[in-house]
Image (cartoon, rainbow, N blue to C red; front, side, top):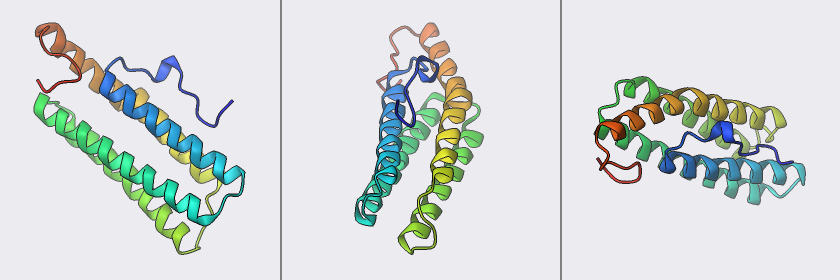
Length: 145
């Protein structure tokens, strides 16, 4: 069993969300495995860089689509993205400057944040996208509306 298993409860049935969430799960699992194996700082810096890049890209795409769709909870959702990105960046800086190690607690926090975010705000976003698709069947979840 991995650190963070992709389960049906995390699927929101909007392909662009699910694919990117699964990628974030994979990265957190890889970071966790490398921490457990006591890999080099160089490897963990690289993985944190990838996690930040993946997260920034995912959030930017999600926010772009929310704006295009006129998503009513955009500001709150965007704020939550900003909070997590700041936390990951602070962790990366502290780790890079040898202030902290990558602990199980820090990884558990990221895991909890991601799963709660998917179960809450991203599930709400997915419902909104699906309602739009019901109104306009020509709209699919992978193309711009």
